[in-house]
Length: 229
Ligand code: ARG
Ligand code: ZN
Ligand code: CA
Image 1: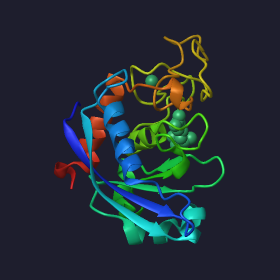
Image 2: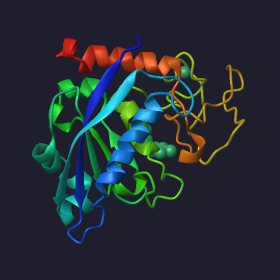
Image 3: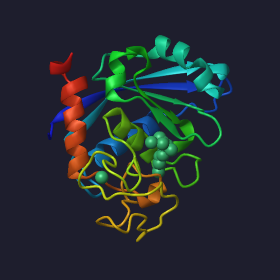
Image 4: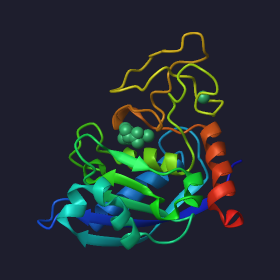
């Protein structure tokens, strides 16, 4: 089901006491603009019906929190989290070597509301230092999870795949930008390597599908919108 929703975004920057990771306001605004463009179909693919509105930025100088987000996650989130199921809390910190992002799924709000949200490495913001992942699409990918999407390679070549009809099956994650790859030859279509829910480089991804828009809309209605709460 297609929705028309503006999601409030509460950004929480957790940075080192020496300033590492203290992403600027303008970069945060750019990151939210990237979310809006991606979910609006401004690059390619579907207009999902989701818009995003930056409602505030918190800044916390805490080197222990910054450098080991997983270890301090409960403490960080209980101190910083804002709003309810419909507010996207976006935590920016150092998630550890090679970890780009992390997200909770919509249903999880009801067993663990405090944990709800998206975390991303400060290196993955637009113009960040993470090679090949510096356009801000990590936040797009994680927000896809937060709205109920699985990876395009979920369940490999077997049903029900990613539970979305118009994303071709894919045996395993893509890396880099392998255009024309076809890991499920007995299934329709080449691998969806340009989909935000694959693992390709940022430079290679630019779309959600109509089916993904519908699944996110369904999840919004069931778990996050006013009618769900
Ligand atoms: N590996 C991460 C995850 O599974 C994020 C991948 C993001 N990909 C990207 N091109 N930014 O949540
Ligand atoms: Zn993912
Ligand atoms: Ca599919």
